[in-house]
Amino acid sequence: MCSIFAMFDLAAGDDLPALRSLALQMSQRQRHRGPDWSGVFVDDGAILVHERLAIVDPASGAQPLRSRDGALALAVNGEIYNHRELRSDSAYDFTTGSDCEVINALYREHGTGFLSRLNGIFAFALWDAATHRYLIARDPLGVCPLYWGHDGDGRLCVASEMKSLVGLCADITEFPPGHVYDSSSGTLVKYWQTPWRAYEATQGRSIAPGALRTAFEAAVHRQMMTDVPYGVLLSGGLDSSLVAAVAAQFARRRVEDDDRAEAWWPRLHSFAIGLAGSPDLAAAEVAAKALDTVHHGFTYTFDEGLDALPEVIRHIETYDVTTIRASTPMFLLARRIKAMGVKMVLSGEGSDEIFGGYLYFHKAPSARDFHDETVRKIDALHSYDCLRANKSMAAWGVEARVPFLDLQFIDTAMGIDAKAKMVPTGGMEKAILRQAFEGALPDSILWRQKEQFSDGVGYGWIDGLKAHAESAVSDREFAAAASRFPYNTPATKEAYFYRRIFEQHFPGDACAATVPGGKSIACSSPAALAWDPAFAAAADPSGRAVAGVHQQALGAGPAAAMV
Image (cartoon, rainbow, N blue to C red):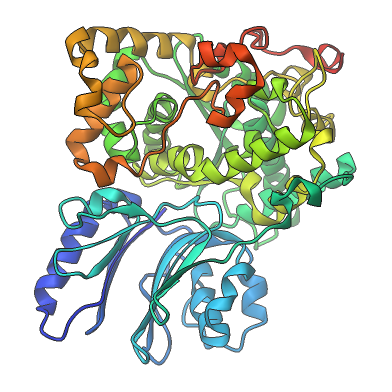
């Protein structure tokens, strides 16, 4: 992951050297995202700063990317997976092999209407010096983070992470996913429109298991686009194991076919982390052995996780309980991965949102309710799982890619009638996905029940965090929580403990308002609490809170799952 920082709406009398220095200073706060190189562009109306993590075209893809005539300057955090097809259809005079340069080409040839043609993850700022026009845009699902606000003199400032705007902008907000801001019109427009958002558009639609499998294999293949060493995150759960299985298939093909379009590091390495004896570590070993990956299973202690919490919260920029619980082991794993020279990993985020994999989906009362909840969960990914995966990995200069959220695949998977995704009584969640990959994994992995990452790393992790917060937050402090934190008032001492750390790094109401709130059970939206009267009383983000559903065994097996 790279980072961008931009400053627009500069005035004629502005001190450009001073503003350039300030922009560099602000951008440096997020340099962990792009430790390989820094690039700066300064014009009389804009300043762009880019911190680069070189993944594609390391030799010539430095940013900001300029057009041959010098009129366009582009700073991008992202990957455009269909850039080869877009290049082949363009008459633009490309100057680099960067996948992101197609944004300049498409803008010049099509104006702002090109965004729906991109299949990728991105957040960018583009400056057109000829017209003094600028665009700001973010990918449809918000896989790449982006924030914006105004400084004291009214200049618009944009940054990949909120920390680069703290102290500079008082009105910091998150730039919304799937939107573009065009300075020529002064409007923020939603460019991503999908028919599957309405349940009626999916009714009666089905897919053969083989077609679903082929669609996902294509998504993983697209996202293996890299010129540097890569790997896979392998928790031993269904989603990461499927990503690893498909990646292993293409990594082997790279050796057999000598296909130079594929990544040059053909032996697939997999990575897992947990407390000693954790369910994930055991399951990951089983999956890695079956897939013949070079596997690295790391352990951490509770104290090591606790020590990292302040840095984790500073990096991930949230006080959400579930996100912090899961981000901490991921943050520690990213440091291990970075130490081994790996710069990109494939991860399994998004599957549970698309296929209803969280345990509370067992209680969905109808296909419409099931579908509507998946849409709500997808809309919220940028605040939770995407934020966690992106920022936890980027903290150590590692890029996380999420094939389940490939735009072509998500259109395929979300176009299916939710009746096919619902969990039969006594059955297993995501059966449609498991059936599509019969034979690809050992049954103990393919039919392993959902284990949220913060649970799977070891149940002692969450239990220990709750116990620590009980001692770290006094009863008196917690009783006054509403006075200290009137917005999103912490409902537990654990939540208060995280909020107190967050406030140290991100003071003020604007920063607090970038984090959503509301009650949840096992990662549900607040709306899903109505599915079962017991949910309201037992609401907790851990998957173990769904009584009568969670199993502590490694897998129920296909026979048990289908009854």
